Length: 119
Image 1 (tube, rainbow, N blue to C red):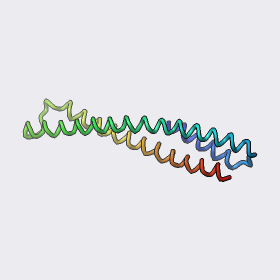
Image 2 (image 1 turned 60 degrees about the horizontal axis):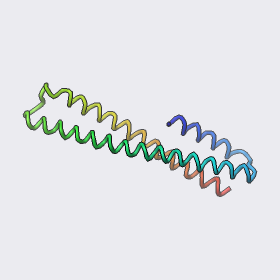
Image 3 (image 1 turned 60 degrees about the vertical axis):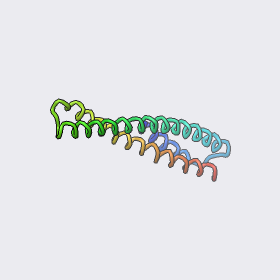
Image 4 (image 1 turned 90 degrees about the vertical axis):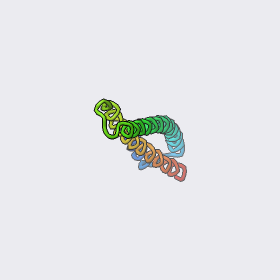
């Protein structure tokens, strides 16, 4: 998805630098509006999945905390739970980073939309 957004941004920037007729500008604005809607949908889906992932990760971390309290320290029998906690934490961080990218670039496309309509 990141590659697709970057390619689209390059395309729209190169098109905006050209001298466009009113019809071409309207066509470009329609294309931009459609692409922004697609990216917004993608952003919404990623936000929902990210919240699910983070909620699950917090639940696993709470379970690790309870197991730590119940066993008065780390218990070797609980290593799968510790490993799952570490994996989910890393995946959640990556998901937040990806969502941050989507959010910022969709906001940038909003500015591009406004520039298209002002020309």
